[in-house]
Structures are given as C-alpha cells and as structure tokens.
Length: 616
Image 1: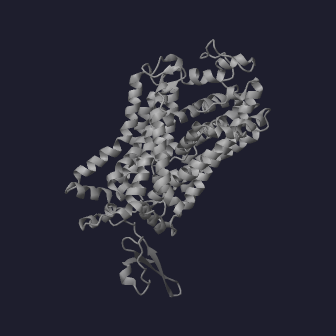
Image 2: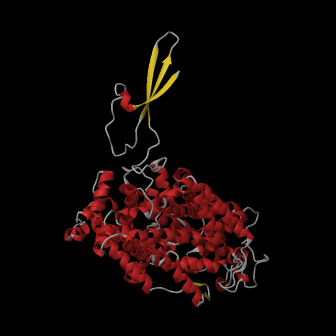
Image 3: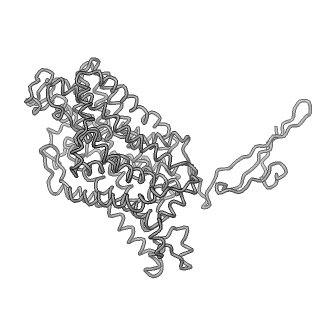
C-alpha cells in the first residue's frame, strides 16, 4: 500500500474545490491511497485530511464541547447549586408562600432571563473569556477582571462548604450517626436531645446536630473570634485537599474533561432529590410542611422587602456576573442556538429551586410534627438547614446512615460543578487574555487550585467560620451586582443593542425580538441600578450568632469588595492613558470595537452619533 499526500491545489481533478467559508482556515490536503489487488486491479481511495486549524493570527482554533449536552449540563450544574436547596424554599415560605412566585417570576422575566441570554450570546460570538470579550468595547475590559476576581474570591470559601459535606459523608459510614446524642466529647452541658425531650423550651437549647456542626466539625468553641483563628484542623484540611484534587482533574484538560464530569455531578442531585421526596412525603407531618411552603398570602406582596428579596434571589441564583456563562458559551460552536439554551437552562434552574422546596419542607414538616413545635421554629436557611436541620431529620429515619450518605453525596455533586464553573471562569478568562498560558493550561490550572487551597486554609481553622462568614458577606454581594450593571451598560449602550442583535442574528439566523432589546437597553440596567442602590442602603455588618465582627474585619471585607469593583475605573484610566493621540481620539479608540479602529482613523465613530444612543 502506497500513501501519498499532495496539496489540494494539485489534485483539482480528483476533488472538487471547496467553497470558501468563514470557518475555513489554512490549507487542506488530500491523502491518496493506492491499493493493489491480487488480480492486478488497482483501486484509488482519497481522503480529505484537515490539518490542525488555526485562526488568522496563527494560533490554534478554539476547542469546543464534545457534545451539546456537555454544555447544557455544565451550565445547569453551575447555576443549580446549594442555594437552590437552602435559600429559595425558605424565602418562599417566609415571604407569602406561593405568592412569592409572583415577584420571583416577574424579575426572572424582565431581568434574569435577558441577562442570562446576554452573557451566553456574548461569550459564544466573541469566543473568549470574561476579559477577552471586551474587545467589543476596550474601555470596559475592567469589568471582565472584576468578575474573574469575584469568581476567585468565591472559590476561597465555596470549596470549604464542599469539604464540610465530604466530612459529613465520611462520618455517615457508621452504625449510629454522630449527631444523634449528647454523650460525645464535643457536647456541652447546653446540649438537649430532642429525641427524649419534646417540650417547647428545648428549642432554645443546642441540639446534638447543631453541636456536632459547630463543636464537632468546626470546633468554633476553641476560638474567641476572627482574631483568634488557631491552626487548620487536619480533618477538614484533608477533606479540602480531596476537593481541590477533584477540581484539578476535572478542569486540567479544559471542557473535554469537565464536560464529562458534569454527566454525574449535574444529574445526580435530581436523582437524589426525587428519592428524598418520595421518602419525605411518607413521613408524618410532611403534608403540613408542604402546605406551609405553598400557602398563599398575597398581602405579603405589599411589603417592599418581599420584592427586594425576590430580586436578590434572581440576581444570585442564575449565576450571572461570575463570568462562568461567558466562559462556558465561548466553547460553543459559532452557530449554536444560544437563545434556546438560555430559555432551557434558566427555566430548569428555577424549576429546580421550586422542586427542592417540596423536599425540604416535607422533612421540616416532619421535624415540626415529631418535636411538637411550630414550623417556623425549625425552618431556616443557609448552612444551618443542610448541616443541622436536615441531618437531624435523617437521623430519626430507619436506615439513617444510608439516607445520610445519599444526602451528602447530593450536596457534594451540587457543590462540585458550581465550584468547577467558578474555577473555569478564572482559568478561561486569564488564559484568553494572556495567550502564552494556552500552552501551559495544566500548570496554570494547578497554580490556581493550589492558591485557592492555601487561602481556604483560613476557613478550616478553629475560627474558620468567622473568615467564611466575612468572605460570604463581602466577596460576591454588592460587587457582583455592580459588575453585571457595568456589563449591561457596556453592551447595550456603548457597544449598541442593535449591533449586539446583529451578532446574534449572524450566529443563530434570528434577530432578538423587541422585548429582549428593550430589556437589555432599559429594563435590566434600571433593575440592576436599583439593586446596587438597595444593596448599599440596606447593608448590615456581618455577624455569626451573637458574635459581632470588629471594625477592622469589616474594613478588610470592604477592601475585598472594592478591590474587584475598582478594576472597572482603574482599567478605564489605564486604557485612556496608554492610547495615542488627543483625549477625544483616545476615547474614540477606547469605546470602539477593536475590529473597527480603522474607522476611527477616518473619523467615523458610531458612538459619537445621536442615532447610536437612540436606536433599539
């Protein structure tokens, strides 16, 4: 057998020339294979061979998801996280039950979905991370670094939650769960075993599950505050190290590996939630809990706080503003229908939040019935729900160890793919901005996860819960609302909603309707501006139980928040100072897409015309 490769230009008689397309990059070759049969007949076989494709700059073409479902599961896995289980159901119960869905769905339609769609389209069209996409308006590149920093900061403490879940998972492989009784070495005299005492006054004492979390896992009793942290505890440090290793080997090869991991991490929570619901509804008092979750009190809608909490939940539950959606969609094929993806994934996220409420409140109703206390005495949100109340409810079931293992596997999978998304935002955003890192992705990923691990060690000390609370309060609060606001203004006003719509039409063949364009230009920016103002106006200093943080800790927290927000003005000043020419020329270059800088040279600046600002 003889194999020969010749340029396609010399084989025009064998293979018809291909029509040039935008995706055709570099020469193609034809592999000519001559096979000589025994009977003397020669057969000629030709194969079109595509060399490694490169873009015009000579770099390798961007990798894409192995399958479309890999992308969808990655987005769903990131957006559906622990907050869907521990935050939304409690908000719904506290703010009028089913009536809470009115403001929630309202803000979802006018802000959540449009912003979700905007980020997916932005990443897919420009095929770069959170910073690189701002070649469409260079002066706003600072907001890309803002969201990258926020994702990095969140990783410092979010991985700690996953390590807690892993610690609980290991602790569940016992005949009797360690948070059942008060006879353990970590228990205090204040511990009250609900299983043996059902009087209402016992609710004000510490339960075995509460003491296990605070004293057995966190060892917070050995710390006097954030200025008395102590050394990292080896048990939690080991769990944190396992989480970091899992993250590294999920991310080191890019979307080719992470796209396979999410087949487990994004689907497992739905299996476990369904199993827990089937078990929960059979428990006594479960139906009462679900009724309380769904009870409709429309009078609560007259309270402005209900609307603010619904708006806040929308802002944080969809994962907009972390740069993750931009990073994930940048690995899509150019013609992928990002509009359909935005509708599907944002809807699944909201439906998951609603569905998890049935699971949570079936068990809360059971706890209320079992201990003969009002539901509001056991209902809570945050870490207290999944690490105190839920484990306590599971401990009372037959085969409690099995149910505990199932539950904490769900928490692990809920957390790990959200953590993967945050890390991917940082990695993709930086390697796209600093191109030399492309060839060293594995090493750079190792650097990021190790740095994250070292900072996270502060959260697994005796006083680590105080550091965790401080990070949780400041890292991604007002700063992320600010980041999304600047992002929306940069795209809809400076780049232009009409131009952005043209980009989407080029990708999917369908121009966004007037509704989407109005939301991008007016409704969503106004909504975000309102949320930023409310966030500042309603700010409360962080606290943990009765512990109030000292002033210096609050200052550190604000410095953390401001460090990410400051990237927007700092980069804008840097850009204006480094561009050539007079100030007007520099401003024109800074707000014009890099591909149109030649128009600036000829005096054609779209942003200097009234039509640009008025068109929708």
